[in-house]
Length: 128
Length: 375
Picture 1: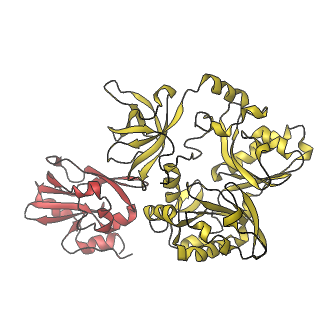
Picture 2: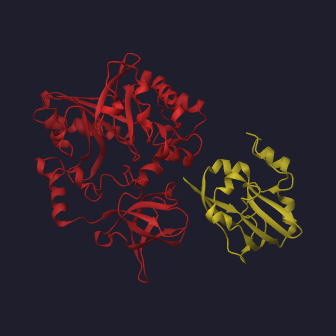
Picture 3: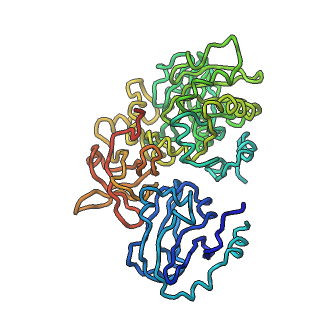
């Protein structure tokens, strides 16, 4: 299936996306990932202030049938989390690249972005 | 190589997401679990239950034989009526939970769980071989010959009769009572229709020859479309039955768990005479059980409880007291729910407990069953 991949994000191989403004990065999961998960019923977010390492599990997204680990695509300190997801976890399914964002990070190692996939490369990975 | 029901092609055509369910390739969902769950609660949903088993027991000795191997009292059954019942081993442990219908005076249809067809047939044949009146009993496992559908939801009575065009038959909606079973024809073949289900809604289950099951499925979908009928998969089946606290074999029931521990004493007729497992069950009735099945609800928004998560007592001296057997996010209640076993002395309704989810204790409360009720 052809998934919706915006031009201003990079993806990790594990289907998380990151959108950067200066040193602040917003992280979520891709349209492909939300489709695989199906109905999201709960998201466990990291606490503000936590130090994240690129590639380490930092959040959990639960669908009706399964719990899946989310791996931070970048390192840095969590500056904000999407409180909307507490009452409306379905935003992850409905708007994965927008209102369904998970958390924001202040990048500690911006060079990590170079290792992430550009839209065309992620598209190829998921066979879109 | 996974087994497929006669409706496999239909599931593919509908774009179902297929999963391995106990060796069967079955639809988890077609559109979304939440959507299909909602359809069943407000309109109608259609499930493929063709993987389930059908065992027919006939003959003058059939009632006595069945009353020996099943816990409920078969003598309570009127003609064309069914009852929920269990089959236990000598330790009172559940071999299966099932429905038995009296189709004719000396003909009974057992509808059993897909995962237990082999175990049930083996046990029944073993018991029959030792049954003194066995020459008057004929037992056949006809599971491979039949498909089955479950049509569930408040609007199903509005179109069930449109599925069986026969001017001479009475209306199923008007005359088929809860747990009743009727015979209808479809494409010239017999179909058994029962007013039963696994969702807590009004509904009809149909057992039909495998060859006509796809045509029946298509007919029901067509008849129900104007009423909002949707195909529904195993995901919704699980959320629906968990909300009304129906047991699932392999979770709330297994060979080491008795019907009394599972809170199913209403289906154990100790007074009917001897049956396999009776002595253990009678003892449990008098002296109590070591564990008791409870239903619970999460006390706050949290990750959903899931099978096998530990249950802890609440408070400063908290300790592990049991395990979740079924759990999910309840689509109708919007909160985590589940069932699990705890010691009887800790099973009172309104007791606070905690569910261990990824190392953290999520507060929950023991609730009376069912967790969801139609208002």
